[in-house]
Amino acid sequence: MTRKPRLSLCMIVRDEAKWIAACLDSVRDVADEMIVVDTGSRDSTPELAERCGAKVYERAWNDDFAEARNYSLERASGDWILWLDADERLDPDGRQAVRDILGTDKWLASLTVVNYYGGDPPDPSRSNRLAQHRLFRNSPKLRFRNAIHEQLMRIPEFSADAIVHLPAVIHHYGYMDDPVREKSKSVRNLRLISRSMQREPDYDPWLDYHAAGELYRLGRLDEALDFVQRAILRFLERRKLPPSLLYRLKYAALIEAGRYGEAARGIDAAIRLHPDYVDLHLYKGIILLHLDRADEALPVFRHCLRLGDGGTAHLTCHGSGSFMAWYHIGRCLRRLGRHGEAREAFAKALELRPDYPEALREMEGCGVDRDQPVHDRPG
Image (cartoon, rainbow, N blue to C red; front, side, top):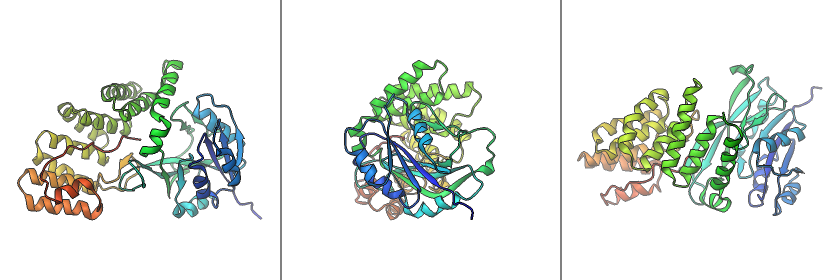
């Protein structure tokens, strides 16, 4: 009889008593073993993990996420690895898809990660989505790199046929308001990023991007823009297309800093590089609105509706291709004096998100533009 392939869940944790049981419960019926590496908890995390059936290993923390993750992989006995953080949960609807892939000849699978932001309770309309490689064969060829914002190394010989996207979702709650405040994540991350930069003079440009993201979350917009621009230039110097994430962060920061003219001069070039990225089109429309060019912004927001919310190839804010676009269409129409059509557009936004506060205010007849943040700090 052919042996069924086994799946190991691999995690690294520290002081995650609030989250750990729910995370492990979400994969209990999927994983054949659960490996938890504790890096120095002072709460009941290790005991809770053991109570949930996990094998818990202690590992001294040395400011290196990749090293800790790779240590967890070395403890795993399964044929496949699924990796999660404690503040994540696997959606029940995706469990069968995860099990089904184990018996195939694939090597690597991506799942859709939904990153929630804002306050409790978690709301899908306040989320960013991105496909991430979270499931892979247990092989020495696949290991993590980077001390901070670690990434899975992929060997070049993997063909496109070896990689698949699964209809499975991971819910991530770590960038909601309370967890961010509790853990001072940005301060910690900036310290680790700075240390990595000092250690490697020719460091990966991704570190510049991650520094920019943390500075943006802290509201230090000018510094964030300096770092994201450096990241873009360093990717170009290496003859690589700067990833779409960099441009999303750049234009979010420019808009929030009120540098609309500067943003307008560059946004079309970014869209030419990533023409299917709905968030960049939304930003373009917002920039044009701020510059009192509603007639030009209107077709841009209509194009956002055509692109829609469905893609996961880019980090996409839920609503950029639906209720947010309708809301901004309403703003454009109102500025153009087309008030009946504007009200219809706000109504469309509210059909898609009934509690959308900006659209509610418009429908209540306040009639005053309020400049809102573009959307939440990129994750």
